[in-house]
Length: 343
Image 1 (cartoon, rainbow, N blue to C red):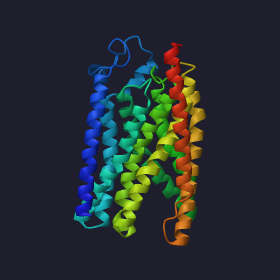
Image 2 (cartoon, rainbow, N blue to C red):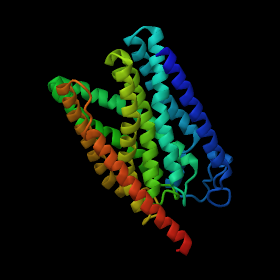
Image 3 (cartoon, rainbow, N blue to C red):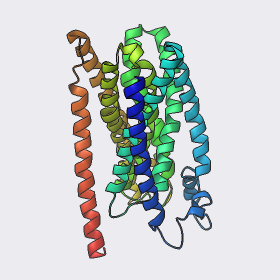
Image 4 (cartoon, rainbow, N blue to C red):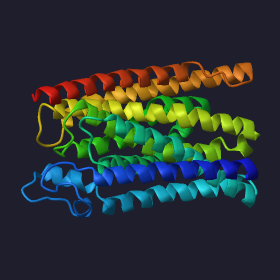
């Protein structure tokens, strides 16, 4: 763990630094909007004169001052993760699990985030939107964690432990988590640059990446740490599985809410898209609940066969991801055609 874990973490961090340096350089030198709407100054002090009240509210969550609050709430969970890691093992091992798990948790969500932003080739929004939604996902993890934990304890007093666990996983957690994530999309929908389905997909995906980052860190350092699962092999498997599949799943679920909001925003430019939120959120909750149900089935199969047998969970995630890739490609072709024809 100390040798391969530290070397791997250093390599992954180096890759992230290079990727983010390139992305930030590209974002800073690319011009967006008109009349200096997106500059370094307006990042902190947005242009609010003559702007609708809904847009002024939306500007709050893409402002670095608000990100500090979100980081503080996320830091509370990170401290809890460290406490759990140190509580389960010796301090030296606990710190290693915490740090290596953190690097593993952040790597793929950030890579997926950058790929998603770059995929919006023809009408790419400023990177501040992506960072703002990622940070919302981090904050959403804070609220979802404590609400899920509280409801799980209450239901454990009423039902058997097994029934309570399954019910929380399939019903409670999807509702709580998607509502917490989707609320950020509802607020951002007040902004005039959130105006189509593709924007909604990317913004929702970014929230999912922020959420997956903290949730995966929690799993890697506590529930699925090498101390708990009994070895580095099983831990590595869990890291790879959750980094790819669970991260993509969280992104795709919330992208559903974002896409529906974007659909209605494209037809009604002003104000928040409450209708899109109301119609899109249940679909995201359903997909999330179905994902958790397949995870429960795979867990039962793992218990029966004595080894990981992930079948239904990966198939659902891959299918939804492929569908979104196809939808995204179609929407990009439409944008290209519209720009070429000037319509």
